[in-house]
Amino acid sequence: MDKIGLITRLSNSSRGNFFSTEIPKASKEDEKKIEELVGELESEGKIKLRECVKREYSVYLHGIIKYTSE
View 1 (cartoon, rainbow, N blue to C red):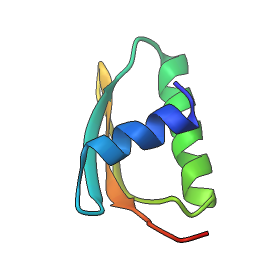
View 2: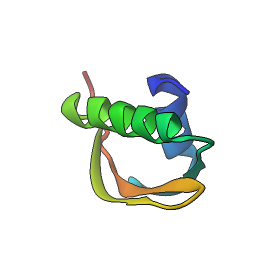
View 3: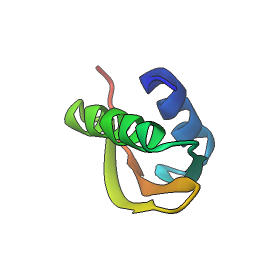
């Protein structure tokens, strides 16, 4: 998964500008990659993460997609 794939997944799982999605993971490396990508999207100002819950087989993300005209 890359940043574009993640932001597309978040956009598809959104209601208005709020998103809520559960991303399956196969290993700890997947979890770290998801956290890294979410961190990059937050630092770029594309999303605002409200909640990140690490579950046994997935990572649950909840937050806001920021729409800007750049």
